[in-house]
Image (cartoon, rainbow, N blue to C red; front, top):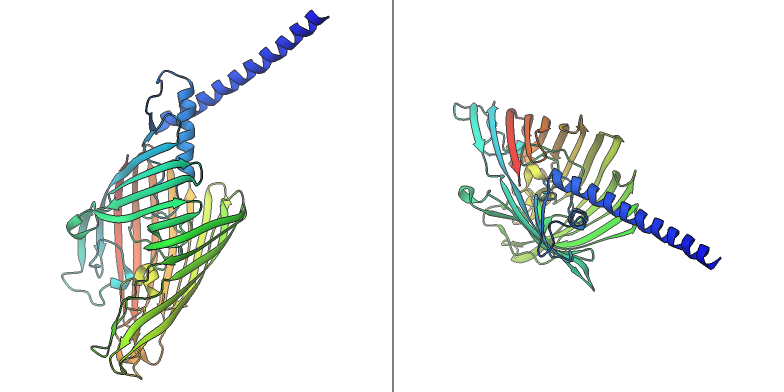
Length: 441
């Protein structure tokens, strides 16, 4: 009887062991197939002939992917990753070469991007038509992930493009992140990266609140459905001053953006409510005092998966003194403007931006994007009366078709239409058709 029991036990152990080996083999094959499609992972000191190496490579790619952000102008997972044998130290290097050619007509914008606030109000021989070629959005980035016993994965990330003066190297992002804390320069907390289309146009929709700020941010989740974040971001005030009657001084208090986000549909759909509080300082040369103006903003954004291949997105933002956060009018001097009723006093103007759009993956290789976006500034204390040429309203329409020739080689075609309206009701429009080819590495 003891012999029979021993034999039965051996059979059970062998069957369990063989099933584990088979499962491990299947997992290795799955990771091998996934890895071979695109990514090149070098594990220093590992046996390249081992079946288990494919499982390790797959886990390394998954670890890297979990730390990436998705959405507007995000880089994703690179083709080349280097790892230690244990996977505790991971280094990724990637980027892409982007070549774009565009043809502009009707009030050609003096910019590489389609900035509707910069549409000329009159047509001349100099701005009637233009051919443009550009490679300045070509990108290079580096990322490390160090798995720490106490802090978990510690990320460091550096990203550059060639949009500096004369197409020189330009720093886009540089930050360290761990345990939900981010320190450095990256996309502002007052943006929803997933609530935007993929565009060939580098700037994107005019109402979108995208900027890259120096910040200290804390992200946390209560449940899989609820995400929260709050940050202190380096203030950058863009103001129009009344001659020598007032001037901007170094800011003293950081901008405070925050959001609460509800997720559903396995994280494929969400709605987010965001807020922004700013205190902006300037010096009144008339009263010889340092003055503080409160700026604030409220925003609602959403990205909803309405079909397995179709997402609808939208955004509405309203506030005062938040113009520097809105794509179309950042750096245009609308955070603070002169109050005509008091010499040396600056004021904010009410501003609203909204956007709706759709993103459709027609097939695994074809994607279509379309969006409508609008920004409007309202008058206060009769400011428009003294500045009739002030920007008041702009509209932005984009439609494109993108095709993945391979996972690393993408092409696309896009049409853009924009209008600008000033405080004196003068109007102008502009058009752009462009094509793009991008090779990622």
